[in-house]
Image (cartoon, rainbow, N blue to C red; front, side, top):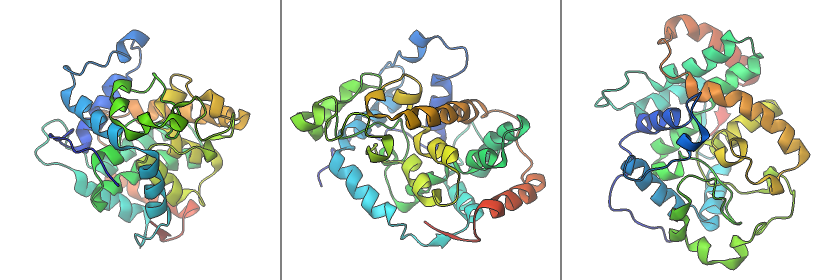
Length: 285
């Protein structure tokens, strides 16, 4: 299938994306501030979204769902996947010396300190493991970024909505009506969201985690919906209720970065036991 070729790299590394997200949605920020997306102020992020919005077509998403949804990358443990994700660290990045596991532990330890259930803590630890897609050779625009439905009209609450003019689906009238290929209040499980690490980790872990955790994993980047109330016309009452869990999770995802560096050696036994409570030794990826 055709994709739009960009002339520059959108982001140098995953950490640059995480820093942008944390700053964009920081606590206490006025609504008018975090909806002010300035292409000149964030040129690498703007370039990222020009690629993301141009290439995340319905056909692309369906192809990726088929490719990765089959879970044919092999068997691996949760902890081994986290170790594998550590290879994403860029030693040239001057702003962080945290491994990916340490960043995940910051999120899960913040959840643990607030006394949430064990499955909630585990959701915090595994929520970004889908970023191993980068290590499978997937481009960043197909791994990270805010997610959004494809096959129906784009909400103006999506970051940089002007870039959807680059997407071939924007020229398909069927895909640009309010409901598009969907039925009113059909439920999010019937809606195809742009492909990325959220959908992948959901598919990898959905047989093992309780439903509130599944919603956290699958929709934590669906900001247009859980931050701004878009796409409620596609949601059921059950979706609305489950999104309360997504909103509970979101602050831990965004605001734990920068906390004290976790002691991996001390924490590992707790997380090994926690993982074993919900997962077999190895699962399909």
